[in-house]
Image (cartoon, rainbow, N blue to C red; front, side):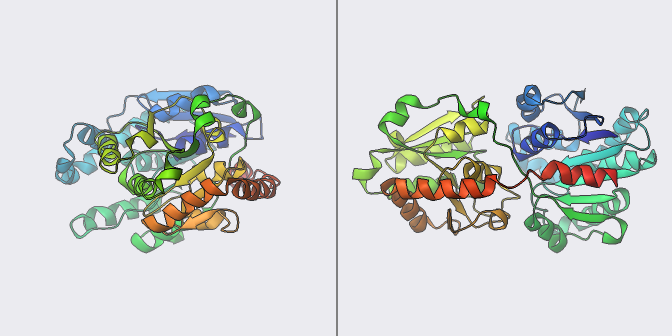
Length: 399
């Protein structure tokens, strides 16, 4: 079987992790896997060397709609985003022509998997499905990792057009959680009679090689280490954690450090640093920026993982990794978290609830042995389960 995976990205995220786990745990050695992605995909550059299976990579220069929007945000011109709506069909046509060229020699029995962040996401993710249908490729699959956007009044004609195009050009829609699928069903108008829908939860395998390296050694000897991993966007709730740290009794707080790990996205990182100064906790907060180490290595060197997401998590790889590594976890009850995190073994709180967050941070610091033992019990329970994600995809592709 010939499998072609397309994804376009300009930073780091769960889509990279999903791709890595999917490829590395693929069981059928006879299958060939090709990945089409943009040259400036930072996430793929990070995971490229970790991919065990021999794969073919096709890079292209991205001049898609997503590339243009990313350019606007990077250059503080995001206010021009809405002015681009009349030009969106041209971006779609450009991307279709690109994929007609890239796919012209592809076997019709191939599988096209377009891996997207939010829905509808990139026009290019839709364009490859259209090109694949033009070439009569039988399996055309869209994977959605995050939530669907709302259809706004001014964009309804475009949203109607997108939903109709998607509905008629894919054969299967995969969502990584029930929460993600629910946002698509309640916010969009797809025609479900044209394709099959399936939920396949993400999964990870803990690799022993990732647990050998020591990080934050000096800090770890002196302080209790809480950690946040991921992007510093507002919806991730970093400021709620900063407020939570500031409310901890000073006699305990002096023995605590919060490590914020992730790309220094301007101006968010500047805002968070200024907030830490304002709250008089700057010495308690360490901003590492992007780290090259695998997330399993990073989490294994923390005492507790914090996820304070405010509105939605399509899945939450960091939470799953913390559980599988036996680390105490504080998380909010948003999106897919409720689908796989057991409240008996983790601190699950409502988003933006600084009071509850402060209590959870304090309790884990004071009674760490109890929470560590509880997390180890959870680790043993969850690690006995078979790795199912890749098998579910293989079954879908072969039918």
